[in-house]
Amino acid sequence: MGDPLLLQVAQPVSEFGTAELASLLVDMRDTMAALDGAGLAAPQIGISLQVVIFGVGANPRYPDAESVPYTELVNPVLEPIGDEIEEGWEGCLSVPGMRGVVPRWRRLRYRGFTPEGAPIEREVADFHARVVQHECDHLLGILYPMRVRDLRQFGFTDALFPGESIQDD
Image (cartoon, rainbow, N blue to C red):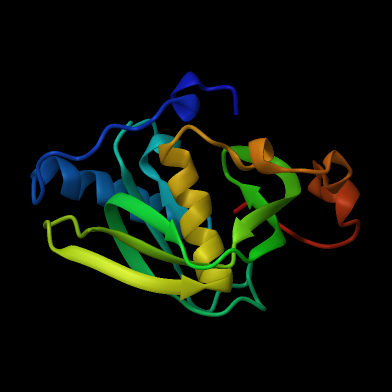
């Protein structure tokens, strides 16, 4: 947090299937895997491009979360389905050591492309929808603390959850 790149709108990808895009995705996958993350956006590793990855299987950091299929999403567009908002705790590798309650659309449709340029469209809900929204916010220069409504529900993880071993997303 504080890096100006994280507050900028990322540039759309204009060429698919390139060696540069493939290399970026390798770096993103390696970073996310090394940190047991649920997702990662290109700006988080210093690249201002509209690229996110996400996915959660059996993950010790998310023991109660439903499975989210591993996805590489380029130039995403999100569309809420309905008007139901759900609040939930979030953390972020770009805001280490902190957590906050963030309102998110409970259901949404996302569209975009694979790294090779094939279209992707899915309707999702709950944790899957939250992860996609969190990662796509990074492409708009938004960090989750900017969405926290009640600062009494934002703070250092150790203070909010004493005795629990909760890591950053």
